[in-house]
Picture 1 (tube, rainbow, N blue to C red):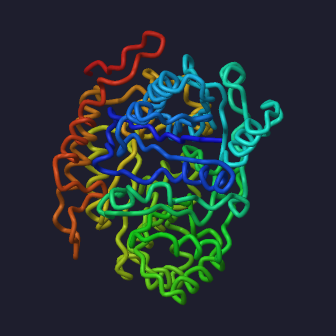
Picture 2 (picture 1 turned 90 degrees about the vertical axis):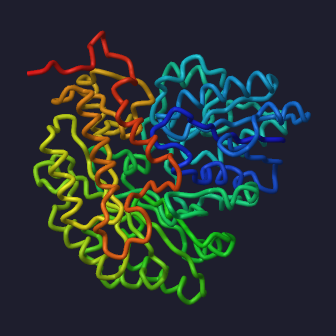
Picture 3 (picture 1 turned 180 degrees about the vertical axis):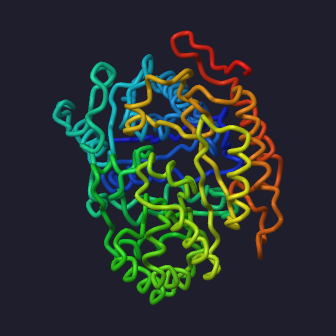
Length: 467
């Protein structure tokens, strides 16, 4: 069977593909599941010519899969799906990705035939095999008719979890044409890799631990080394939810990488308390190529951390910063901006960034993402809604400040912390979403204009009267 996998381009987003354009690793995983059995192509709408050129060249497909990678990319994916159905009306159209795995919202009217949830490789292979054999598609595990999906929604989050040891290796050969164009921040070019999946912690705002039903899965060390040997890029963005949970295994992996002679620069997620408990492991990984880490600081206020069910304190963030700086590892620390922030709170966070000496500060507006505990508890409080708001740069709640002032303060925070020149040894602009052109300035302006997006809930105006 001929299969085309499509990654949509979201044009009207705050974080544009001029600031981050990573390889569509989920599609490469799907391609890996079909490798040697079916003919697969990947189309990246961010970098490839328009889909119409494929059709004009005579390309035909039996199955076309369109990714809905994030909730905020739902409208772009819907537009892409309609284009696919127009160009290849006889092809079976399948949706997959993170958003349909957790929600069926905003997908009404999509011309899809089926939905595949979770990792999806086995289901897509089962679909292609069944089509080839003429077998009934309702016998394919993990394949859900689209209309039933719209009516019933996805199954409970976590029921589609797979141990990463059993997932086929991604087929990166299909996108070598773009290998030098994929990047994340100033890591240019960069490739993505996954060492594990899941997280044992239970942060209230996070969906990641729920996707694996609270379980933590790790890849075999030999499997990681095999993938590393196939990646030419020096820069690697490790997309694990938290790679260092099993310290013994990460000691083994660091030793294996050092012994193998790989020379890579790793950017990785880690909890502050994990780092503080394992200073020797952090030093070993620095020697293995750890270049920067993303630490979810969230806040330095204990009451806020308790509300998030973070399971770690502010003192551990401070200790982790000191540890990484002593090792020469750059820290990207993320802070949560709450809707009840006043001007003084934005100033406080900016001062904390400066005091901590955060190399690469980033900020997320508190966003109840579909499927999270926070979403189920707080959705009745939304005053504005729409998929484009679920990008962690917009608020769904009533703000304490007038909403335009809230977004102005957020834009000032992002721009002000990025303009710092007091980071010792900084060789790049001290902001994670670095740009040599005007992309960062346009990102700041998009944040400033954040009040213009979304639709009022039940006629509620998204504004705060002046006191």
